[in-house]
Image (cartoon, rainbow, N blue to C red; front, side):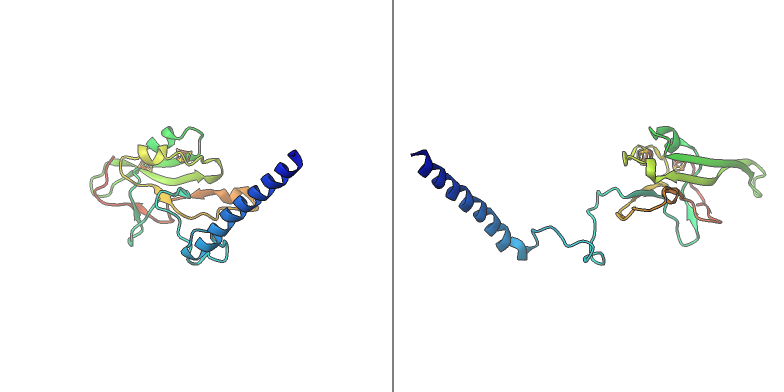
Length: 158
Ligand code: SF4
Ligand code: SF4
């Protein structure tokens, strides 16, 4: 008797599996299947909350919003950020002011926790949505986020 019940159960589970496969097959045209990467590289857009890497936006005048306060560096739990800074004399006021020389970001150490972005008082750093970060040389994962010759936007204070 168990021989026939095993056959029955086998056919039943086969049909159940084929039913699931059939549903996915029929819905494939509605875009519910896994996307074909990397063929869709040109059109693939990650969702808004995706955390690709930390970046520092610059405007058309090559200005950023980073005052060098180091709050992001302090907030980072694993040393992914190093702020290299100096005090520079402001020619208008004659006073010395902190300025970043380099904002060094180690993507290879970053756990995407976002604590640095939350800690930043001037919204100087944000998430980028790029997702292709594989490299053959680990040193490429260390980046300087402030662009060459860039400077702090007027009016931004921490
Ligand atoms: S996201 Fe987290 S781990 Fe990455 S740099 Fe910011 S604080 Fe550090
Ligand atoms: S990114 Fe923000 S928190 Fe970090 S040093 Fe610049 S201003 Fe300060």
